[in-house]
Image 1: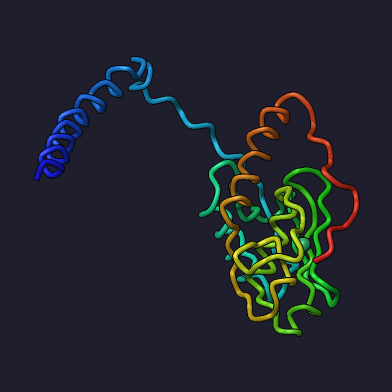
Image 2: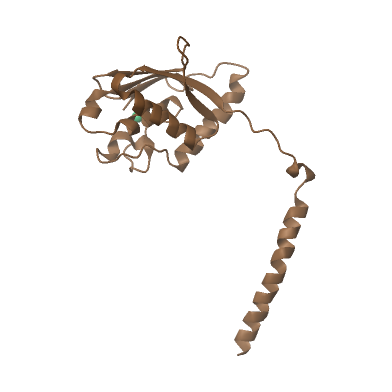
Length: 194
Ligand SMILES: [Zn+2]
């Protein structure tokens, strides 16, 4: 009985203090907090999937997944005759990416992995992930995009996880401001396999 009374009193005190706390939080916000600051524009990267032959729609889906997943960069199909940041080709090798600098390079959607049963949309978003500055994270679970083929043929997840999304946001928030002054150096010179 005594305990119940105490608990009730405590709960009532908490209920009373909640509106006070939230009121204080609002009051403590600087007046500038109500001003709508323009969001930094996403850095637009163009891609040319015309050489990816039968994988063109999987590449479009992979690009759309990145557009759904991050705010700092946007992948758009290049206009006809426009030089694209990213070239996507199909060949008979293993899928791979050749980044030349952050956001630039060539992706190969290799039929070797496709013929083994690996998912073409996951391959596409994985390889685009390399162009967006992500390294492989192998071995890794299916929830990770950059675990690539190590997650096995049954893994069809084409979405980057929270850490991978955050890493790309970081890459482009840093890369964008640097890019306005000087070219961003290549993150790696060698081909990223798979
Ligand atoms: Zn890879």
